[in-house]
Length: 235
Image (tube, rainbow, N blue to C red; front, side, top):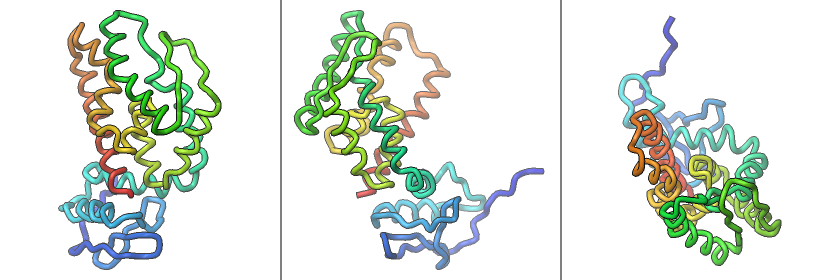
């Protein structure tokens, strides 16, 4: 038996200001998350984006075409109940940040990493007051406890919706610093993605591109850029 699929039953999609933010209504009925939590988001801009997704549905509802709704659902159903645990998990990336682990060769790759990543570590040290040490190779290098504590405090300052977007920016890129650069306006999401793929880009230049790997990377890139768009609408 095929799974039941929701169909569009509403004619009108509206936005309403409520306690805690804004909600989206379908013919006057508030949208709820899969866990039956009221979908209340912090900004009217985010509510507008979610409303547009619901309004664009025709016939069968296609969740894959509703990334803003999905991220808002994640914020409410997944981030809110385990906020502290998510903060801990993301802050831990500071101890193993992509930007701190460099190639030992060849020189062209080493130089490319330095040109792309050194300015971001300098920015983190000055703007965020988070000095981090870089090393060549994969052996773990301990970061200063004060830097890690500062990173934890920064991550903990996000609201659940911002944290939902930040989670994807960090997890996909492997870099807390790149993700923070996006959220602080230091980098566009597109620029941060390119900097996170320096190694992969270099490999492609040497050996060519694998079609299956390229397809997987395209999905990851789309998810990363969408996380940047979602974050921009949260504040």
